[in-house]
Length: 305
Image 1 (cartoon, helix red, strand yellow):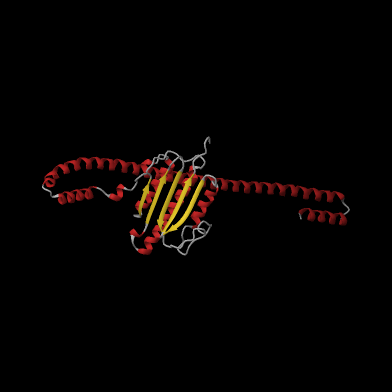
Image 2 (image 1 turned 60 degrees about the vertical axis):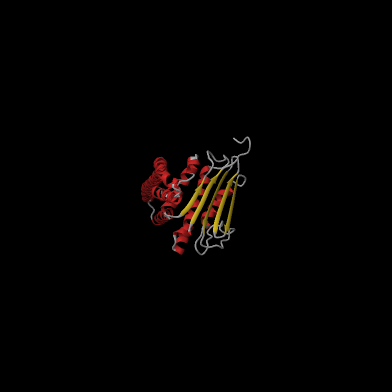
């Protein structure tokens, strides 16, 4: 547009004026104006670009800071849970030692009652003493976790058991055999994601069940780790609100029942499982009001590095 207007003006003066010098002066003036305008546009564009880059750098720094704070917060939470677990072990070890010592004294004191055939009195006193010295739920809080030697598997178990305990949801966890490592064919972080998602689904469904029935004992979560011959097995089951869940549909993205069950979470699980078609087996089922999730990681092949 600028070139068109400048050319039109020059052409007009050429037709109307015989003085070539004036035409050249005009042309030179327009050229200088064009150069000045171009420099101005360049500097303005450069200034705007620097401003945008500065804003983007600032935004990136803010995101990095948020990510760093988030990681630090996650580490703090994990450390707090591990410290709580350590204190739990130490505390209950001391309790067991005192219990053993006191129990021996108590038995010595009850010998006379036993010799007089007053067995029921002995039993009643033993039961009363045990109940007053032990919180059964607290004793079972981290049951089996001591057999998990892989720090990632142990951390996710401690985190989710702590959440269940704090929410007062009835639960059990089992790990009877020592687990030192999982098969190398699976990335442990992917396995942790699966375990975390299924625990969160079970906790969410348990809260819905409690809200519906207004009873804490209406919900329950049972989970376990197991290993044999180099494999790794994980199973978790929980009571559910809707007993007619279609296990074929819940794996699909955005699927949910009218009560908003676990469709999205399990669709994410399915994406992870798809990466390990040759080494990971997953099964969903609904059995008598329970949702059951089972996972098996197959052992490494002989000679696999």
